[in-house]
Length: 240
Image (tube, rainbow, N blue to C red; front, side, top):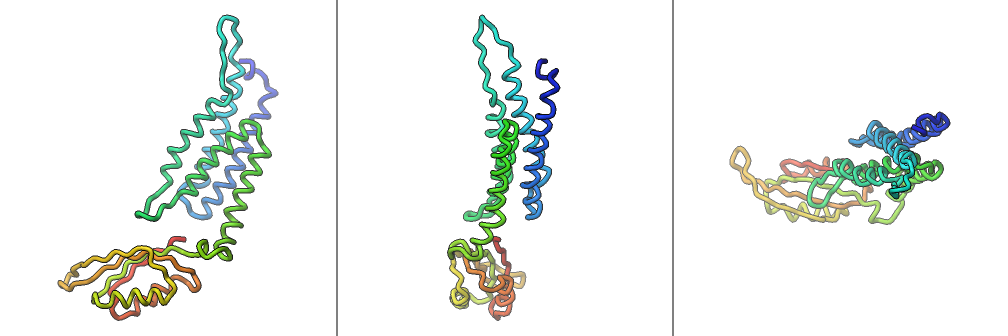
């Protein structure tokens, strides 16, 4: 009860918890703005309680009284180590696999791990380091990444496009492929299957995965494809 009775520790602990909460709000607001599944509330809860557990872990290690007959040693960051491994289960829930080649949610999962790291760092007393890390990460996400997406190498500026086209005539498949290549679209994957419509007409469904430089609005691709006479229907998904 020595530490509990020491009221001089209260202001420092409250400052740590408050700072961890404030820094987590920076991450949480960024996730909320981008409409990600894990945002403000989750980041705040993770960082705040990670900070609390770190403080408890450090202080509890020094509360154990020394004994002459037993050599008692405690790790001040024992609970913090468990936070790092345990938070991985929560981050894994944010990762979604769309198909064989597209995975989303990795940045959000990393942000969850980062929110826990903020709480641990602040709880251990690394205020400046935690603040600098948050500001640096936000600078990369909000400034460097968008800049490279517009002015960086071609590989970074390309967009992934997935769409399904239903054709009424299989002889027009090569025409569609030629049209996409003429639009500077690189075909990464193509799957073709035959389907029967309700009026017993044989149709041909093509599942594409493309990469393209967005020289013009990608929504115009949908409009142009629907005007082709041999296309029955089109469904497009753009990975931003």
